[in-house]
Length: 249
Image (cartoon, rainbow, N blue to C red):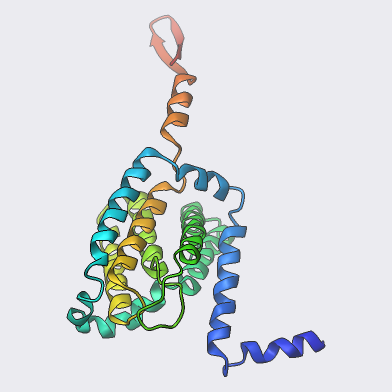
């Protein structure tokens, strides 16, 4: 009881930053715990050749952006109002519970499509946190506003681009376009609000696109091995009966 009383001041409205930190921590724990059986496999799939090329391209762009980190901020004052929305949308404290909620609703209502979408989105955001967190600690870059040393890369941008890429893969249609638009606005808002530099946002977008492209995807080598050992049963109708051809690839 005494411990509970001691914790109450930490989550009291007078300590909003602590309350947000606790919600964020719980969200991340949920995102990496609920799909724990698949996250190790997803993490292993990050080490694919196409991801290495994407990472190299993103790192090159981020390095180039480093020279002009402060330049874009003065040109982004028009996104100030939108940033209030995208700051919420890109936060793990919103996107992760939303993904888990979709998963839960789909499971409860036995709607397979919604359940699988929510589960895949939870996996995507969980892996994003596992990549972004260590990078922030390792880089130890001070934010433009001096708040802390967790500037590089932008977690909000990584989350939103991961969501957009995941939606694109799931729908394979124009539905993902608004999500990419929100991702771009999120990155712009983080720069305008002095939360991140341009290079932070570029690298965050790179991480998000890589993770969003990776979750649930099998490595090329594993896919080829499965295809090589696949047995195909092909029924063939004949005038006097049914013939079955077995093909080993």
